Image (tube, rainbow, N blue to C red; front, side, top):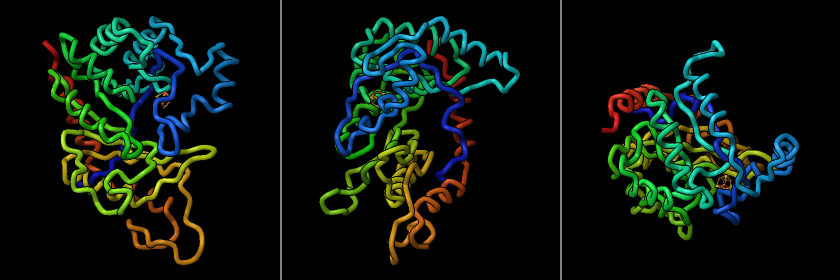
Length: 296
Ligand code: SF4
């Protein structure tokens, strides 16, 4: 089955919080280049809302729900939106957010709109596990719980994600490999494939390179390697973007693993995206499954 899909990752984003604290830092840290801390973004938000993105801020709950209603009832005349990413300007399991507020979001938003699918993405996946273990109704089937793994020093998050998968009503779990900063499939010391690396139990990975000023490059071979493991383990791949990956410089650069040509990593990655794609179909069937599997 082809592993790259043309689906858009989500239709819209909804932010109940804004502002955060970095958890993955350093050269291989996913938070290191987080856009909410970039001067232009922080300036823009500060001017518009007075919010300092270094601190957790709460957006008006009712406003966000009204926004959601307008999408689902198609008030703007556009297509009804189905896939919503929650909190891309913060982390919905940030340690400063009390569990009763997270519960409210689950009850009123996620379970309140069962025809929509909510993508939850957190780097505090251990806190998410703690929350769902305590929760009587488990994980709402229309919530896809995801975590970020940009480099091998965060592979332990896969195990936590699998534990969440075992909680009642969990429909799908996913991993954001974005920004992709180190080949997840190989031992960094030797470059040899790591036989222990597995994506079993993970439903979807979203892969992408870092963008913007100071972006750290992604090697297309990492994407190819990851795809190989995903295919073996029955995990879908949505290849999102090459990021700021540039063609390699100089004569005789490495041969592209995707098409055999030289020195054009970014083009090669874009072509990978075009080699499609039963993924949309599989994704749709998962959505249908979501609709059928209502919690008791
Ligand atoms: S957890 Fe997400 S929002 Fe928070 S600093 Fe890291 S990348 Fe940014």
